[in-house]
Length: 122
Length: 122
Length: 122
Length: 122
Image 1 (cartoon, each protein chain N blue to C red):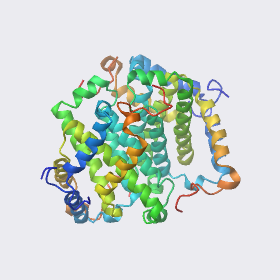
Image 2 (image 1 turned 180 degrees about the vertical axis):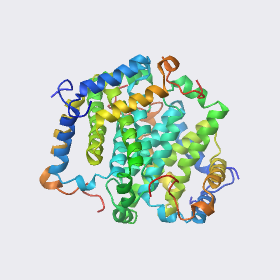
Image 3 (image 1 turned 135 degrees about the vertical axis):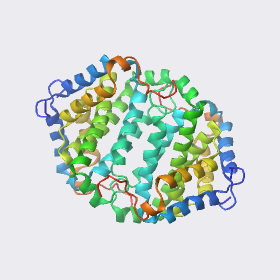
C-alpha cells in the first residue's frame, strides 16, 4: 500500500503486529527506543560519511545506494512508530503541532531561504 | 487530523508545504537531513539520560515529560518525511519492505520474547 | 605505552601520523569528524542496545564484550584526537576548562549523589 | 597543564576526581556513558548543521564558534575518560591497538588520499 492510501494508523498497526508476534513489547521502553533511533540514524548518516556535496547528490540518485538509504530510513521510522505505539502518541497530531510551533520559531519572512540560526557563523 | 484518517501522503505534504514556504528545499540534501535526525534523536534520548528503568517508565507517564517526548519524536519524524520528500521515497512501502526483511532476519520462532542478538552477552 | 607515561601530545601525534600517511587530512573537516564521532558512539551504544542494568554490568565484565567496547571507545577517541589536531585544540586544557565550567554548573553541595537535572521527572 | 606534559593518566584522574566529589560513579554504567557520548557528539555536530564546506571552514576559524566546538569536544572526551575509568580501560593502549587494526584494514597503498569505502558511490 502506497503513501497515498496508507494511514498512519495502518502503518502503526503493521509495526505493532510485527512487535506483538515476537512478544517484544516488553523491550519497548522509551529510552531503548530512543537509543535505537540514534543507532539507526547513525547507520543512515554513515552512508554519507566523508561525502562532499556532489557525492551526496550522486549517492541520492544511484539505485544501490538509494535502496540502502530507503531501508535505513525505514529502520528509523519503524522505531518512531514503535515509540508512538508504546506511549500512545498520535503521530499526525504531533507532527502538525510541531509544525505550528516551528512556524512560530521560524517565521517565513525571517527565514525564507535561510536555514542558519541567528548568531551562528555564516 | 488524527492517525486514523491521515495518510502518509497527507503528512508528507504538510511537511513539504512548510519547507517550500521557507525555500528550504535547497538545504535538504540527504547528508544534512540524516545529521538532523541524529541531532533530534539525541535530544529525545537526553530526556532519559541517566534514568533507570523505573524513571523511564515514570517519565513516559508524566504529562510534562511526555509532552516533551511527543514533540521530540515529531522533530525526528519531520526530518524523516523531509528525506522521503527529497528522495521521493514511499514511506509506507519502505516500512512494509523493511518489516518483511526484518521478519526473515528475526523469525518468530527464534526470537519470541528475545531481543538479544545471538552471540551477545545475556 | 600505557596511560601513566603517554602524554596527550604523544597520542595526538600517533593519530596524526596515521592520518598523514594516508593523506587523509583533506577529509578531516570538523563537520565530518563530528559526524564520525556520532557514528562511532552509536556503534558503542549498540553494544548495550536493549540491555537492562544487569546485562550492561555483565557485558562490562565479559572479556569478549569488553574487548569490543574497548575498541569502539578507541574509535571515538581517535576522531576526538583528529578534531583536536585539525583545529589545533589543546585537549588537556579543554577538558580542564570544561571541568571548571561543569563544576560551577553542578556544585558539589547541590549535586552530590544526584545526576538528575532539576525539573526532570525522578 | 598542556598536552605536551599531561599524561592520559593525569587527565583521567582529573575527571575521576570530579566524578568522585559528586558521588556520580553510581550513575556511570557503560550504557548511560555511551548514550551521553552520543548526546554530546550531537551537540558538536549541531554546530555545523546545514553548513556547507565553506561555512564549516569559517566556523572552524571564528573564535566564538571555535570556543563552542572546543568545549563540546571536551564534553565528549570527558565521557570517554569516564568510561575508561569505569571499565579500567587503558586509553593509550586502546588507541594504539586500534591504529594497528585500522592500519591493516586501510593499508597505505590502497587508501592513500582515498577515504571512501570500496563499493560506495563516489
